Amino acid sequence: MGKTVTSLRNFVNGSWVLSEATEYLEVENPGTGETLGIVPLSTRRDVDQAVRSAKTAFEEWSRVPILERQQYLFKMKQILEEHLGELAEIITYEHGKILPEARGEVKRAIENIDYAISAPALMQGRILANAASGVDVEMQYFPEGVFAIVSPFNFPAMIPFWFLPHAIIMGNTVVVKPSEQVPLTMARVFELLEKVTFPPGVINLVNGDKQAVDSLISHPELRGVASVSSTPVMKYIASEAHQYGKKFLCNGGAKNFIVVMPDADIDEHLPNILGSIYGNTGQRCLAGSNVVAVGGISSQFRMKVKEAVNNLRVGYGLDRDSQMGPLVSKKARERVTGYVEQGIREGARLAVDGRALTLSKYPGGYYLGPMIFEDVDPRSTIARDEIFGPVLIHLEAKNLEDALSFIEKSPYGNAASIYTTDPRAIRTFVMDVRAGNIGVNIGVPAPIAYFPFAGMKESFMGMLHGQSDEAFRFFSDIKVVTKRI
Image (cartoon, rainbow, N blue to C red; front, side, top):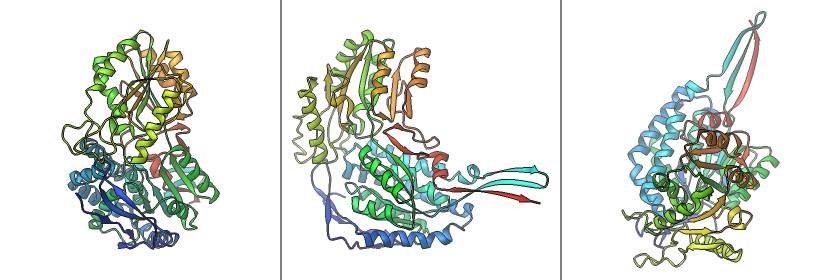
């Protein structure tokens, strides 16, 4: 990558094609501020060509035996494994996250391919013989058509693979729309996937912004859309999909809680808690943001967390000693500092202030140091809104019941974690918290590929989730055949 500026193209019908776009955006390296590429904001005609290519390919691809489709995924997995390190570096270049996090992201993408390979065993349907005299009833899964995958900036490799391998092994075709902030990763992935030699039109890539998304959703040949975004964007995509009669699977934003009980071993769990809060610079929908210290543990937790945070090394993602990278863009940094200023105005105490951080080696990067707010009103803006940055909101609760009330009042329901050895507290937490991903002594309860990525309240819209057999079912429909022998 380095200083080479790449002009991106779309991948349609098995070939790289120029967009008809008249508007373009620069793709930046947030660690240095240098320009890495130019991404086109594709037009409605660009999208139409991709969807129609996918629709044409679907007619034959859907009839390819599933065991033959499975072979393409074996090749896909092998190629991405061979280029794992390269893809991780590209993620770090365009997103900013530290290299170990980027490598972990690519591994998660590959895990989803690995799971999707199991479709022939998991999606066999079922049969009830002799349901009535001489009558058998059977249920079968069938592919549906063309699906759009709309992915966010924070995991440019992983999130498209929550959906892509599941869709194509079930016999569908796809159009992937990566985030215009980080399009280089998926561009390289599609270059690598050319070696898999999918039939033209099975997988397509269209760059762009909201106009491309609108064009995808409204296209008459599109069957459905799977997306991950902020909650306002999630609601918009789901509403548009509903209006046009499309299936939708939409993950949204989050404001996740970490509850630290009085019996928790702070020294043991603190690295895990801090990784939840400051990993990926807080730019993930499973980030722990609100930390609720219960009972008498609060003062001890305050002291130890501040000491640890002051030793956290912020730096360029490719530097070996970096523990936290930059924000993804100047706009993202400004958004986070805006929330910090809002918190101060609302009366919270900024116990650790990372706004003044500068890196002499990388003056053009979008860096912020870790921050901690104390004495925070649970009703305040910073305690309720998704900040999406390296900001710890320290709340206090008298007991577990009070902590659970904080979580219940949050509009979001993506994740929540508890640190304790008390089995009763664990059971109460798991049973009562309305969040899709629950952690017990784990700060980032990210489901592995064999389980769905859940979500509740304003963190999810749809009936089925990404990953696992739920993704298989989203990308298929059923036929129930009743036959007399």
